[in-house]
Amino acid sequence: MKHNNLLRLTVSALLVATDVVVSPLFRIEGLAPMSSVMNVIIGVLVDPLYALIITMMTGCIRMLIFGIPPLALTGAVFGGVLASLLYRFTKKVRMSWVGEIIGTGIIGSLLSYPVMILFTGSGNGMYWFIYTPRFLFATLIGGFAGTFISMILLKQRRFIEIKNLFK
Image 1 (cartoon, helix red, strand yellow):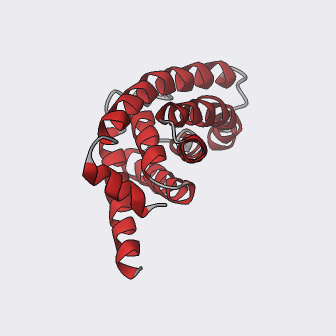
Image 2 (tube, rainbow, N blue to C red):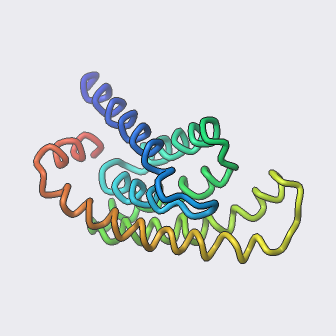
């Protein structure tokens, strides 16, 4: 039992590190498709609690290191958790992608509006039109890639063993 907890924490730390490193690739403000790639993979690999912890840690580290606004949290946390929940209920990788689309593309983008008002002090109504299309576009592109990668990884014995740690 103690050994499994240590392995779970190690895998979680590696997922955080990987997400922090790859998420700035191809990133434009409000558009981080690599984060969606990771959210789908995280959704398939870990349970919802670990997905929450991993995405929150990743968002906080990205905000501290890269100076990203709180969109790093609103954009990733809901997608990662919903990706994990939908995968757990259906056992279908594409449902992890659907969770990412709903969680990040819709919920995360809509919650980014009030967060950015608090962060910037500006109540510009254009935020609604800026974040939702970008978040949705990023989740469609990144989620597709994450789904494809996850399907390949699910054929690997080691990935399945790691996935079984989080049952």
